[in-house]
Image 1 (spheres, helix red, strand yellow):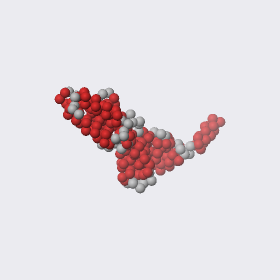
Image 2: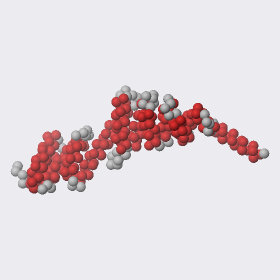
Image 3: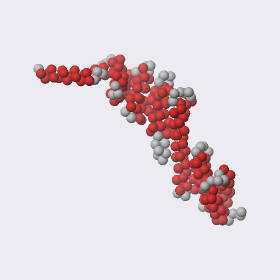
Image 4: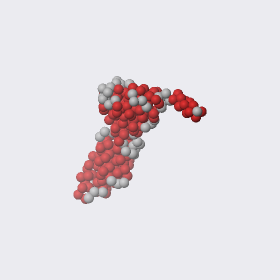
Length: 263
């Protein structure tokens, strides 16, 4: 008899500690909905997530689905499960674009990809994804509550991609693949905005062109030198006081001598 009483007391105690347990196990959709949001409000995000995941399927196509999906994404974000949170915010944007939560979901999706963005020397998939999403957010909601923050993140991510492109070109330059380096630095200069990187890229592009001419077969040396000479003169005009100028001038004169180009 005492054992039965003890079990009953434990059950009451546990039920009191978790008032949502009974609702969570209910067959009623409304009860499970109440339990999910109750867990969320209490900060029990794992329990909330499990119920939200069930509810998302049950509410599919219903107006309530967007709200549930939004809170599922928030719960995963609170648990620092950023990949899952990003996925759920994305589903909301795609499946319920007219929802009042769509704008916030789009921004949070972009912000999560921003947080997941790796250093420039690693894969930049999340960086590009975040840039695309931030651009969409700023196009759709130019006066939105997160517009200023979105602009700041966008500029930072664009600078990261510039840095990656610059260092990719620099790798080819360092290992002596001068023709490839010349092309990559040229591509970089078509869109780069960072002044210090632009100057160094223009210098290394001209250097790579001169070294390409030196290392070419005889019949291609002079035509390639003329291309390099044009890049050299462009650099001199653009950066007459550059700290790189003495090195570039020295290489230009050296290439002239090696190829026996008349002055």
